[in-house]
Image: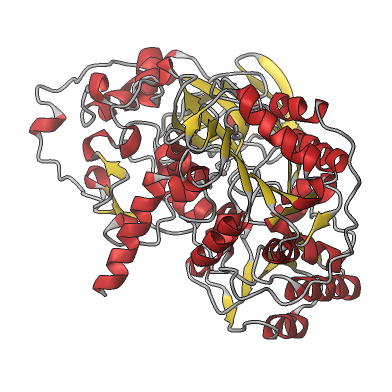
Length: 630
């Protein structure tokens, strides 16, 4: 690596040859203000706020777009630089209203901050921006709002939509100071926009607002919890803004990895929460309701099945596995429909590294549209994309080569085109024996061509269940045993089963069972039809770990809860008798029975959490109404 020696404000440092002045200054903790710069976006250099003085060139240069050279000497705080920044701020304040008291960006606004450091916080002209003829631009959105007078023309919103999300949903119209940011297609909510919220998060001022958060809370009054999103198996880094009792928003970190599921779906954690246990829909004590579970497992373990959710933490899975093992009850999960047979067919699996994902030269997306189940992975797809599927919708943003195929044709087409240089991406499409066969074929392709295979379940902790829970039964086998009367009781952790079974079949099974117990985050849904319902924390309320695609990551609680999942499970475990283990035959994955409701998942309803979000549901209904009108 070639190094050059430079001096910044009298401090000598050595940095790599192709380093910008701004990045070099960061290494010695020098603060240089910016509006249009972000380390993950292409350099724009439009705001000029990062001007510094090049002593040898005897002129001001932009720090974000100027590269160091050997012997360079930079001054970041001389009088010329201060005057430059003051002038730029004066120009910005001629068009920017001083409406901080009603602006949601107040407290986290770059213009507010830099005005305090470097320039005036008043309008130097005798008129205000509201008295100027300044056109407004209505995005026709229920979730995003654009305030044209506040815009500082940094273009980061357009850049993040083009270069990170790649949906190209917003653009600029007009020129110069008359530039407006506008949806490429209106209404915004029914366009190519994926509602990731990155345009809101990256805006340095209050020009783009998230309507559900508008007038809701001041940022400095909220607490920040840095954690990993657990809506899907990618585990993207996010920030939860909360007040210990309520989540006010979930937003991206500087990594710019967030999608609509947490950004809009955060509200699902705030409503209809089951806070106290119930027996027959009447509130009961924890001791009484847990005793029912304990009696069931002690007295009828061979007639009882446990259904475990991939939305549980690893620590929870370990305890539930011990409960099933000690009692001798059956244990199953909805992941036995797709991920488990896939992995059993595939054999030993290792996910590609972060570097391999970032440096991939070609991608092959197989099965369902990955943009609906795991959108953030598409942010990595900067090279050629091939989609082998009959259902390609939002992925069209990447201009893929589309090979129309379904069922067994998919693997045939894959074998025809693969050359070993691609990363093959698969989320979900095949189930039962089809998933097992597909897993075997994928392994053959990898062995022959040395491809990297990226398996991304649409739920967060499927790999955790595979690695932790022992003796998993195939879910259709458990349902057959319920129908035959061999299994008479069920203990549900979460309500994933309701996402897969047709409604009439689910009702039939529930009526067949003698005892139904559910550990649930919500007091609606299956909690209403079970004999006992026990509160269950989500990843927003309990510390723990998930086995994400990108490794085991810790999630941190943001909301205070009066329960603790593991303590609840520990109470059950400590009072269990040792039962005889069930003889679980190795699953012979067959065709999935017709009563399983396997539909293509969309971004707004990929889980029982998403379906409870008013924001995601509203977005869904708006899109459906547009389809009906067409």
